[in-house]
Length: 115
Length: 111
Image (tube, rainbow over all chains, first blue to last red; front, top):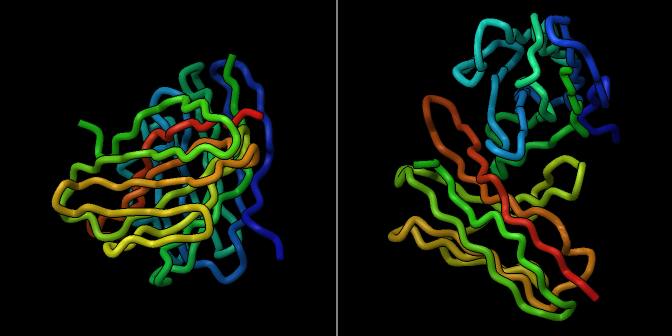
């Protein structure tokens, strides 16, 4: 079975450019999460979707960040304009809402470098 | 104060050693607790849940002390393959169920 799929796996861009990260959750999962991981701050939740609807975006750093989930099998995280401090690994995760285990399944991540 | 705090390590231990990691959390209303494992340059994966009565999975034992808001993970007979970062994770209900991750404790098991 395919796990969570993310693309691209690596992205190097210059400051000011637009960056779009993509995620395909596990089929049948109705909750989707975007996280950012850095050495200093660890894994931080950016935004959470349930049944394609954004439930909590309080972790989105600022207006330069936006996320969409147009359907149950696809989500994007966009940064415009990008800045060097956005350099991090961005993970997408999915789960079945209400599942007893509460386990989240993570994608392989996108390693973003903004020069 | 961070919601979930862990010693970042690294913990350097020889094969066969027993090693313990601790974690504290700040929100007494936290509902559930987990340990995730993250290998270098990989994604986090669930290692085990932590139950109030304590639970064991092979060489791994997890304990929860709600009164002290403290979680532990014990690894017995360490293997080289146990080298990874171990993330303490707390489930909080903030209107929705949200996982809050510690920054992780790095373990290095050497021959």
